[in-house]
Image (cartoon, rainbow, N blue to C red; front, side, top):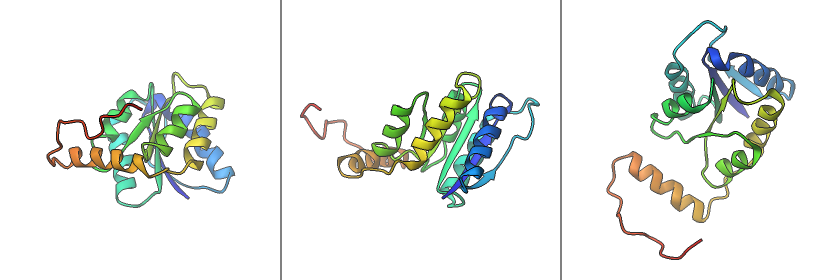
Length: 159
């Protein structure tokens, strides 16, 4: 598995812990920076991670800023990226299993290292379930590509 990492200054320390953790497991990691705690702009790193994933340079991406919010917003501007901010392990599993998320975002100032490593491990080990979830992910892609999507509910059943 190939993983691309990127962070701003607020996520630098957590990125370093994740990079070390993944390398110790034998995971191929491409670190796009930042490489210090000097102030930088998180959108640049969200874009870089997202672009690396859509170009096929990595299987999945991990992007980190202070809260995980801004870098998620930036990464999600890249066509084909489904970045998920996860603050606990259940969301990490569901983001992969149901939403086929291809970028995990984390908050370096709000998520402790131990929990973050658990989130990363679950995110990377979980496979997309497909099935009814594929139809929903495809709807996201249609919207992203500007294709007309009916405003009528496609499925009127609850659940």
